[in-house]
Image (cartoon, rainbow, N blue to C red; front, side):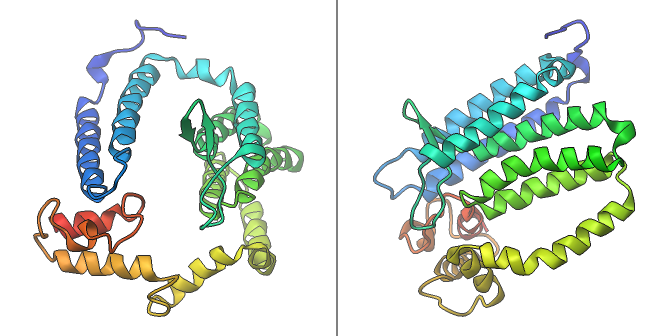
Length: 273
């Protein structure tokens, strides 16, 4: 499992590690600013804990022989799918946005879809490696797509279209890197185009609204496009040098909702420029 003799820290990229640490600290500070007016100050604590766990994981993975992980590719896949099934049965989420993607165990919440992305990559990497000489055989390709489709469908049913698209992209890149024949790539493109009407029909209303919001950003500024509209105001008001840390009006007066999530960029732009 661990082979310290083969691991040389002389070759370890400490500059990269330092960069990651600095970015993590920077992120914690910005989350603190984004949640400064919140009654419950839990987001910063969660981010700090996640950073510490990430550092531990880095050390663990650096010391571990990656071939050892590959030996457990089947159990890893089973656990990943099992967690996604658990989400379908017992998961919770924000009903306002229509997604149910969280599991809580002993008061600790996490999104199995994020873990399943790593689990699927490990599984497919090992499976493709074991069948690299038959990658263009229809039966082998169908097996790979079948194994990939199970977690993707479970994620899509949460519903989480964004993560589903990310996983699909991972699978496509791995198959391409494995030497997939161009004719299969062409078939996939044709199938994707033909499937667009069906995919649109299966989308939930909130997912369709997000697409409409992207295409028509100036409409419904007090409804569907409110978040994006307020984020643009925040970015513009920061100008070149920003309003100052903890001084953003859009951020601190809570005009920008859910600012501690994907829209943290707007907080950074408003306060630091």
